[in-house]
Image (cartoon, rainbow, N blue to C red; front, side):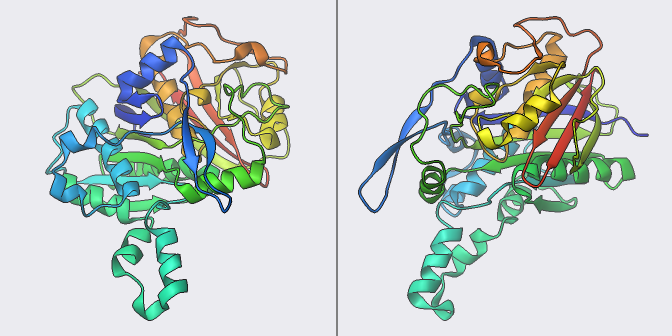
Length: 363
């Protein structure tokens, strides 16, 4: 079987921009959410959220190019450029580079819902063609391909909270089959006004305190947005890699998952509906959880993957925020706990007993 490594990581979100910003957040502790004004029929109301800043993209891409892009494509493009930069690759002429993007909801800020509004208001014959084109989930991948000259296969996969492991399965298979030697894999989700409004309607009075995802009997989720991209390679690279991608699996579980002696990075993100499932899966295991740094969103498992890769490279664990609130029997690793020849499983659960597991190993 071909050996697959992670050569570059590009992340940004409520913690800042770049993989070093994520590493600093993991070392220092909780990231404070910002307060977002959400329009409602009774005036604006406030919602705590972990939001991303797109300003760094203006340094990397010409302004005239960005004017033609929707915000979802901009989020994806910034993550992709950061991953290529971290891997030491030029942002152009990337022949035979595959591209796979995972997203839970796709473009929602100025495209999908704007398209639906124009159909309701003007009829399908007068709908904006720009809104229609940008409402396609694959528009972000197309924009990235044009900007970096990626000529390999190109795909976007959306499966809500299992989007990341499902898309990573495809990226891994392309590399194992030899279709390409490198794949730029990433996940992106944005927090639009409507998505923020739906978040509040679904959960009632919103939570504004720090997330405590290991307090599985409480609802402490805070919405987030951002992107996490990775350059995966099946080549013998000169640049040292972060770690190896051992396995990816998805499916439906009928009971606790067998994870052996792996350290578990739990995708628990403060949603009480899945708390008992995470508690059962992690009972008696060694665990970490970092979702308070980037918030609750379908792309969260990609940030878990980035955190796990950083731990394997440094050989030490990061502290889990609000670990003292853990309400099930597990060993929560303290800061700087040594990881010797470790294998890490990133575990996420979704509706209808769905699960995704990404397994990483050392170089």
